[in-house]
Image (cartoon, rainbow, N blue to C red; front, side, top):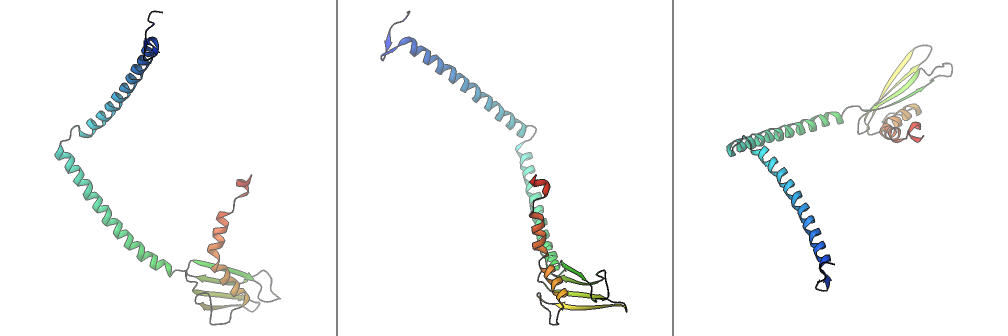
Length: 182
């Protein structure tokens, strides 16, 4: 043993080893801090190189003007979107089709009832009955899912299909495919 002296009741060799470890740890921390400072300095230099304060100010003012233009465009697009949405609300976007045999003597389901409705379930039902003598078509107005003219069961079914088309599409798109299950 070279040194057998104790400091605060601890052997001097242990104190020296602990201090050397602390110096090494502090050296590593200092190296990491210097590295981070170099990265930040490089980014700052890249930002300001070749540009004076006036150049940066003009760049910022240009960007603010561009942002104002974008803001104005967004307001215009929002207004146009509301106008288009108003037009789309009155469009027929729901359809229900029922094919059937209108007469017992006919086969092939050549007769049909077609319901075309908008978002408020208003529109019309077009029914066409095919017979040996000819083809007869009838149109009936539908207001909020109801008609003031008596409806056949096929016409009612066509209206029901048109009213539930959104739910049917939702159900079909949320069902897992057989491939997904396996």
